[in-house]
Image: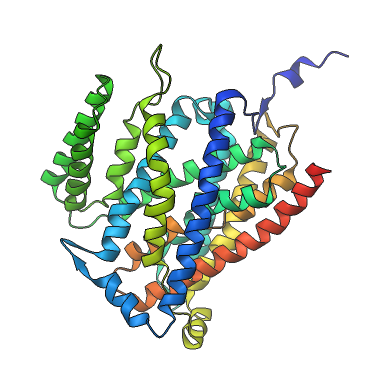
Length: 404
């Protein structure tokens, strides 16, 4: 029986992933799984160390001055720049040759990601605006999804799930990262210095020109990257933005006769360093919060902590699922025949794992208010663990359904 022409013309909300992009995604998932486990290990070490009899040594090391920055600042402003560089590369790749290159295929994960950022922010703002001791300026903390943790959970419990669902999570996370980058650049820049910014932009432009000229010498790119990072830091804009910008001007399409484009070669070399060193190092110095009985009781009545936890657990899940469903319902997009809406619901809960970027925004939002930072970080950690556990149960159930 022939299919109705109108049915054939419908766009897929979650398109099939085939060929080279599928191989790339599989390789990425394996690396991110390992990175997620290392990130988890670093978090556990930080929590145990910060709540042990040696907690003073932890805080002394974290606050120690190492050249122009503290050890904690080197981890958040320095090491994490590598993570954001790879996020920039992923974003450009998705825009040029991936699922974001076609508007009809990009619309659902893009709307889902935006909804999954807006609703948590609204929940946080309502919680803190109605409270006498609320701090509305922390609205951005629950908006970010941690790709390493989320992909690690998905890979561990979802081996039989369709590749299209994993591609959706990756695309959502890339858009989510881009949104977080914009938030950091626009709302958390301090003491702006134009000359330093212009110097950083000039070096980023030089990187772009060298890419256009097909220059491959790493000895040219390394000092350019370091200079762009340092001048971005000195400009008052968060230094990790330099990493994103460099990623966005890296060439992602191979020339005729070229086996791999520069972005793929660089990513192949740098991703293990990001997953195994940079992100766990950041977690080691960012996740060390005190979880004493008194601190936990304070957190239960703190509007900041409540807003963060509610935003991650409920705002993310409702925003991602609701954005996806409404887009498919009121446009010509349709769900991939390999998937069920229950799959999307499980991944929407998984998006509530907000860790790396959420912890970074926590530090930027609350500045020198150490007590508030501790409570906010504890809320991020607890909500992320709960989201991971709930999502793991839902995904394991869906995985068994596909395996049967």
